[in-house]
Image (cartoon, rainbow, N blue to C red):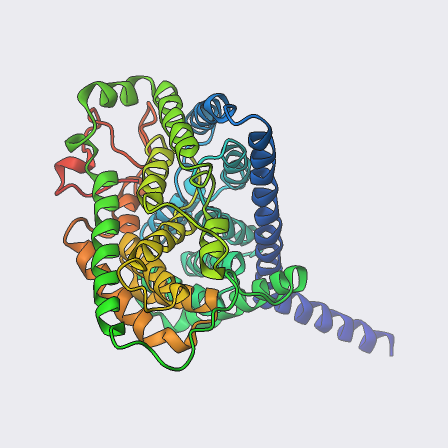
Length: 460
């Protein structure tokens, strides 16, 4: 009897260890991704609210705080946390397109994870134009990648699945857009569909999504818009015009980031290469001035402005999208950790607001939704991801065909100006970066193989 019980306990222990290795480790990682995504979002929101509170009392304060914050972020990133700069999505793409262990060991460490959260929090305290979604992708990938330590025999397939699932779960939890998480992993991160990875990917998104829903409740990122069942006669024309405008604007934005040698004066390029912290302070000053000129609307991610336009309670200048673009470029040229998803959606909303002057017979929320998906698709050149994200954000199933058409046209127009932004920037991380640390978003003119010399392909 005792021998039988002992044998049973041994079998049970082995079975338990097997289940833990097969499912438990991965589920634990997905739970952690959901928790971190939610609390990171709350941290960023709290940080920006502090900036707004301080700025409301002393309108001139951003002229000091924003440049100082930008300089501090660049100093910390370049001195101590190489690999945490920028949005984080190019780093994840680089890991997936390289030997996973080596690249992940450089770009997805726990040290990078903590730096991404901490430095982006400092950046939002200064009102810099950054989003949290890109960083959440890198944070989610880093969390899952480090779960490989619990596998007795980790290999490249397991590590790749962990990275992909963590990145997709991070985006899904950040936006509460589970479908977009799946599409993002297929279209943006891998540019292919792998059947053997699909179950792992979906499971990770489900678990992280459940955690996010449990903490935040069921919500849509921008609320729900009601566009009715009947569209105006000029609706098809509005779709085409919106796609062309946002496609050109998004393409120009990508071109500016990827061709700095053609538009930044030589003196500033030299400053950027030799004194990056001073260059960051100058960019911060420009962001502060633009913010004051815009009445404070260009500071931060732009989430409040985009949602306000959709709900009809925000009235922005026709120059808002251009001013926001200037602020966004100023935030990314120095290499400050932060994402471009939310700012891009805000810029798109601004273009929708402008286009309403020409299509006044159309509902404003309808035009804003089209312009949001158009600009996001133009910047990322991932049209499926763009329209699925916006559709889930606004619960806009009635607009699904028009959103798809806008995303497709705008992404094709953007391609005339520049290659896919994330994919091009990821090339920088395919091998260890050399010292001294150049900017993650803008290749220095002194680099051995700058992006500008290779068909202007951006490096990250």
